[in-house]
Every structure is written in C-alpha cells, then in structure tokens.
Image 1 (cartoon, rainbow, N blue to C red):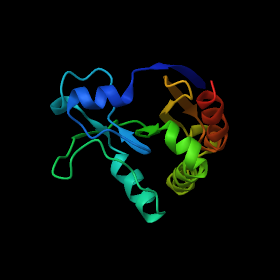
Image 2 (cartoon, rainbow, N blue to C red):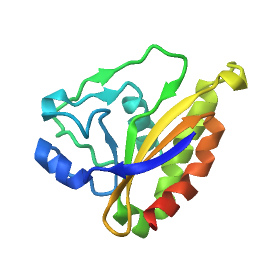
Image 3 (cartoon, rainbow, N blue to C red):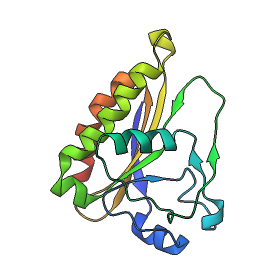
Image 4 (cartoon, rainbow, N blue to C red):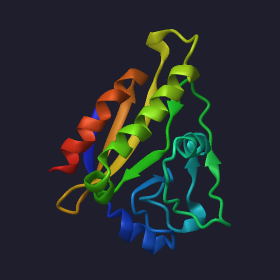
Length: 163
C-alpha cells in the first residue's frame, strides 16, 4: 500500500516545538505533527538502528533534538518492522538526490537480514516519508508492504517532490 497526503510545514513545526530545524535528512518523532510540546515527542524504537546504519554509511542526519536531549522511544509488539518517519528536504533532493536513494537502500539491506528466516508473505514494513515539494509544500508518503517494495520509493519521492 502506498498513500500520499498533505503534511504540515516541518520547519515551522520544529521551530514551534523548540527543536532543531532539519536541513537535509532527519528522523521525525511519531507524533511530530500533533504533539503539544517537545516533551511529548516520541520516536519509533527503530530510530537508533537507522541512525547507526546511516552513520556507518556516511549519511549525516539533522536530529531534531539537541545533543543533550533524548526523546523516548515507543516499541510495538507486532511482527512487522515499523520504521521512523524520514524527512527529506527539497534542498537535499535538488543538491544531492542520490543520498536519499542510498539512505533507503541502507534500510532495505538491513531489512533483508532482519527478516531472514521469516516466510516472505509474513514480512511487513511500515515507513513514512515526509518530503518537501518544489513549490514549498510538504507531503507524507506512507508505505506498508513487503521490504522489497522499498526499492520503488525513490522514484515516488522524486515524483512527489516535483509536484
């Protein structure tokens, strides 16, 4: 399943909450658009793993939290991989579009190992991507399906960005 919908202004929201403003690629908390304060923000339990994978592959993220801050994590007890919400700025897509593809490939490669030994029809991934369009709007792309479907996301992101 792939669904595209409108999303709030990420920079404005980060500023309202007193967070760092993401400039290229960032992991947004699960409740970023509805949280009343920074203290209520929570990350998916997969956020630290994605951060480590990106760091190991030379991908620099703009964290919303300050170095001394730690947002809590929520863990779902389901047999699926629920990824963090990924923000991809218009600047990143125009100046270094390959970085977005590499970031998603790193996650996809990790999931190949994560799902090893699990029957193909039982493998399920949930991932949300927020991207900025060329016109300055924000869109949410929600993916739910098998891990091999992640390979199609870079093209979808480019199409949404060009709207």
